[in-house]
Picture 1 (cartoon, rainbow, N blue to C red):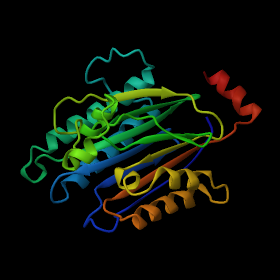
Picture 2 (cartoon, rainbow, N blue to C red):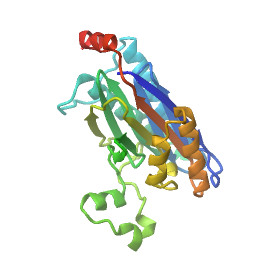
Picture 3 (cartoon, one colour):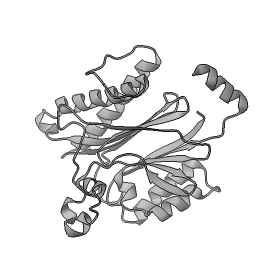
Picture 4 (cartoon, one colour):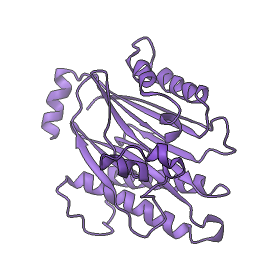
Length: 265
């Protein structure tokens, strides 16, 4: 699969530190957004640990130094997807162990990861940092929202935010707080011209979907500029949180590239 990618992060207008971390590794086919939480830089530590663990894990995979599985994975998914889950289990365990230190007590993080495998893309996430597929002017959430508000919406009950705004963004799954974590995973097969948007909630909470669609549709802007404009719009909308955005553009492959991919498969 031929891709073009860009990503960046910004502290926003109201936070003292940036607790977001991100990873853009086209050579590994790996992209990660982590939004940390916890007092006195602990969230920054948690999100950074996740990104570093994921990068190290998949660098080992690339060099054929295959990490051991922490536990059996019975899901009907590819071996590479199982390693995506295993890398997240490993990140969870490391953050969980680290948060036992007093200065890191109760630190944790959301995480969303995208992994490319041949002509498919695997999406895995814990928490509420979303991954969207932008195709034919339609912006579709393809990750799972692990918050009280998200759980209510999945049951068709979408009024929680207006009746109890204090609970709206309370997370139901987080990396690090428990020894084990339930990771959502799904597979998509995007087409040429499609885009993936990965971000922290500091973007999606301050920029409307109409504005996001308009930016992604604008052919006059490079992918790098689109990322910068998305961040600028989040700051214009209030900038109340750290802001991270990664864009992945699915490009048309040449006939020779398609033939090589078939032989590789």
